[in-house]
Structures are given as structure tokens and as C-alpha cells.
Image (cartoon, rainbow, N blue to C red):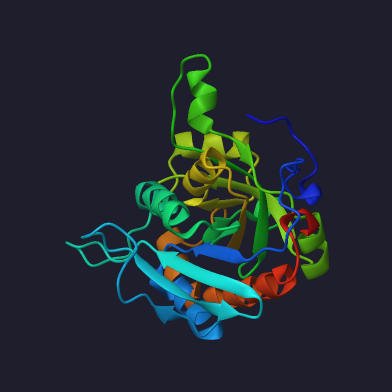
Amino acid sequence: MAPPHDDKAAAEVNDDSTPKRPISNVLFIIAMQTEASPLVNKFQLVEEPESVFPKGVPWVRYYGKYKDLNINIVCPGKDKILGVDSVGTVSASLLTYASIQALQPDLIINAGTAGGFKAKGASIGDVFLASDIAFHDRRIPIPVFDLYGVGSRQAFSTPNLAKELNLKVGKLSTGDSLDMCPQDEAAIVANDATVKDMEGAAIAYVAHLLEVPAIFLKAVTDIIDGDKPTAEEFLQNLAAVTAALDLAAAQVVDFINGKSCSEL
């Protein structure tokens, strides 16, 4: 795991290779259609009629121009058998890899809903900018493999963005289950996570592999250490929290417009 640091620093990763030219191509990776639709409407994007993705996959791409930016929003689409959103790390990693190859983004934004911990200061409707991302359900109790399983990474450094938009900053932990077993809980505590999702660390892994800056916006739909069942609270708050997420995402895009990655 990465050494602890001040969350308010918002992901201390930047180097001399960071492009100085203005950002042109922004790629949103969003797991659920419900989360994506308001942004598609906000930016007046259109669905791609002929997919750049492999034949047969359910992935969906919306694209268009907003101010000086080319905006792409990609979703993993509906499971071809069950018809539900293809959430989770497998779909997210495949979609991220294919999207980077096809669309060559300057910046990735993973926007989505998440569970939050009130003990770490999370409330329903809060939007967090993730500083660090790690897995909590890849347990490999062998030296060094254990660190690989956790896969801790820092998000791209955006101190100016966090300050300007007054976003909360916290660590994100990712796993493929909506609920939380005792082993996952222990790993999440070890990750020092404020929010928990089902895609972020997978997207971070691929973005790091292919050297594309990535930031993570997570809006809290349910309080994991609260007194309500997670699934019930998630469904109850999804619509309202998605509205808060999309407002924050739109503000992020407005801030990004005309700036280079090094200015974020």
C-alpha cells in the first residue's frame, strides 16, 4: 500500500511528462445508464450509430463537443442475458482499455455513485474526489502478492480543481460486491477508505498501465456504517444523488475547459 498522506492534497501524482497543452479529449467512464443520462443531456451528446468497439459487446458511447472539449461518455451497457447494468471491475477494465485504444483521451473521469462511511465524514449526497484507490476483495496472503492484490494507486493530482470546486477528498476502495463481509470491512479499514465502489480501482489500474491521467468523482448514495440496509438505501437515494453527481461533473468539465492537465 502507498504510504499515508494528507487527503486534502488530493492525489499527489504529477511529473514532468504531464502534457502542458490544453485538454482536448475528455472520456467519462460511467457504470450505470441512470448515472450517465443527465450528463448526456447536459452536454447534448449523441449516441454513436456505428460502434468503435468490438462487434457484439453491449458497450455504449455518447459523443459531442462542449465548449472547447470533445466529450465522450462510455457505459458498459446492459448484460445481454439479464438486462441489468454491467457493473463491476471486469466490465469496467475491459471498457476502459478499449476506450483508451479507440478514443485516445487526454483525461479520464470515472463518475459514479458509491457507499460512504459516516465515521470518515461522508453523508448522503456528498461528492468526493478520490485521492487514492485500492481493491478490498483481492486477498492474496503471500508476500508481495498481497500488495499486488490491494493494488493501491494515487489518482491524478488535481489540487486546483479540488480547491476551486470545494470538493471533499477521500480514499476510494473497490470491490465486486455491493454488500460488505467482515474480510472486506477489514481491508477497507486498512485502505483508510471514505467511499466504496465497484469499478474505480479497475479503471485506475488500466489508466495507470496505459499512462492516461484519471480522476474519480464519487457521490454517496448509502452510508455503509449506518443503520439502513445498503441495497434499500442505495435504491432510495439513487436518483437524487445522481443529480448531485452530474452537477459536480458538469462543474468539473467547466473548470477543465481551456486548461492543461498540469493546471488541474
